[in-house]
Amino acid sequence: MRVFLEVHLKLIATIWAILISVLALLLLMNTIKFSGLMSAVVSSKLEVVTASIERSVIKAEQLGLPLQEMNNLSDLLIREKHRDPQIRAIHVVDRHGKPLFSSESGTLSATPDSPLIRRALFSEEAAWRLDEEHALYTGLQLFDATGG
Image (cartoon, rainbow, N blue to C red; front, side, top):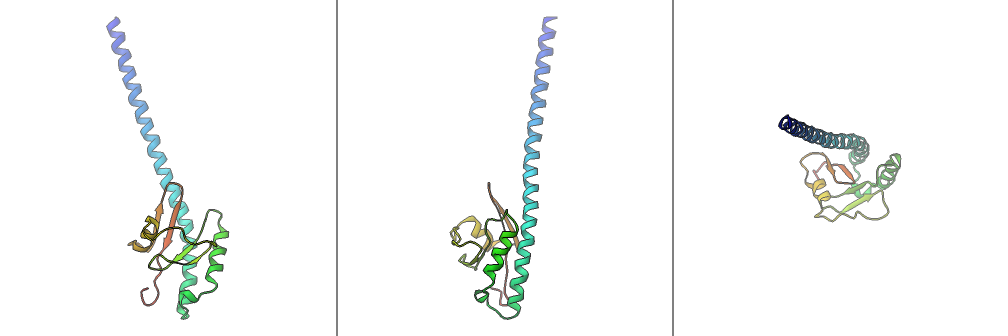
């Protein structure tokens, strides 16, 4: 009878250990899935902002204004930034990573070899996203009539 109880207790302990492991794995997977889902939701909100800015830039470019001569673009960036409190900053950079316009008074702190600038300049997709630990970056590549 004693052997039966020892085997029975070991079997129950093993089943509990497996059950706890499976539940921990499910919790981890759901946490990762939730994080990805929330990242996609925030990114879609930010894509609306970038599409709005894109329309303004394209309209000005169709009128023949070079990007450097768009005086109201900084005001537009500041206005779009203040519409959503989750947006920290909006930057417009050229193809070399040099900031042209910004919603911040300071300059863009990312260096040309940072993952953010590399993702922005060399992404295969027109609308790109970079998800870091405490920040989500999203952007849109714009090309003028000459492909610049």
